[in-house]
Length: 370
Image (cartoon, rainbow, N blue to C red; front, side, top):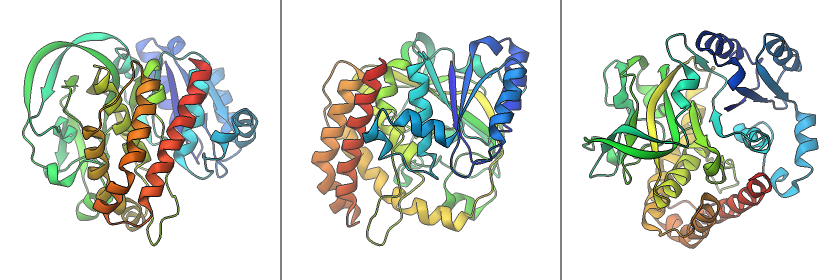
C-alpha cells in the first residue's frame, strides 16, 4: 500500500500514521510519499528522514527531485502547476512506478486515529468482497449520513449536487462486489463546502463505523482525503488541474471531486464498485479563508451537476480503465459546448475540452508503468 500526500507545512501528520501502523502491525506494509511544493519548509526532508529512522518507509519529493523526474514527461510537467495540490499527481505516478497495488490519497491535515486500523480499512481494494449495498432510485447517496454531526443539520459533502439533497436510499442486501476504490470518512471537520461552513460550525463527533458498497448507478462525491484506488484504476484517477483562465471567474477546489466522478463513471462502465466508511481519520483542518474558499468553489458548485449529467448520459467504450478514460475524455470534449450553455460561464467549454487532453496525457504516462 502506497500513501500520497501534498503539503506546504512540516509533515507532522506522519507521526499519527507511524503510531497507527505500529499499533496494528502494518509498519512493513506501507510506503508514504510526501509531495512538497515551493512553500514547503526544507526541514521536511529531515522530518521524513526521522520517520525512516523509526522504521516507516517515507520518501519526501522536494521541488528539485520533482523537476528532475518530470523532465521525462514534459507534457505532464506543463500541466502540473506549482503552489497547487495538483502536485499530488506526481506522487500518484511515483507510487504507480514503484508497483503499488493500492494507492491511498490523504491530505496533510488527515490524522490516523488510534481506534481505526488505517491499513485494514483500505486493504479490500482490488478484491471482490461481500458487503452491504446501498442503492438509490435518485442515483445519489449522501455519505454524510454515515457521520454523527453536531449540530444535526442536513449537510452534504463538498461536490454533492444541491438539488439532490434529500434523495431517498435503501439497502439492497449483502452482495459480492468487485471493489476498485474506497472513500474513508473523517471525524472532526467533515469535508463539506464553504457555503455550509459559513452558515455553521459543523463537527463530526462520530460515525457508524461500517463499510458499505454503493450500488452501480448510486453516486457520491469522492475526494482525495482518505481515499484508496486499485492499481488498475489509477488511469481514471487524474487529479484535475484547476485555476484555468476563465473570464471573470475563479474555479478551484473541485479537482479532486471531478477526478472522483471520472473514476466512478469508469468503474460503473467496467462493472466495479466503490465502498464508503472505514477507515476513519481525524480531520483537523488547516486554516482557511472561508470567503476565498467560497469564491473558489461557487462555479464548481454550479458546473458539477451538469458535468455529472454529461458523464452519466455518455456511453463509454473500452475493456479497461485506460480505454474507458480515453472514451470519457472524448465524450467530455463532445459535450463541452452543451455544458457551457447550461452553466452560462464563458470559456468553460474550452476548459472542459482541455481536461480531456489532460486525461489523455495522464493515461499515456500511466501506460509507461502498467
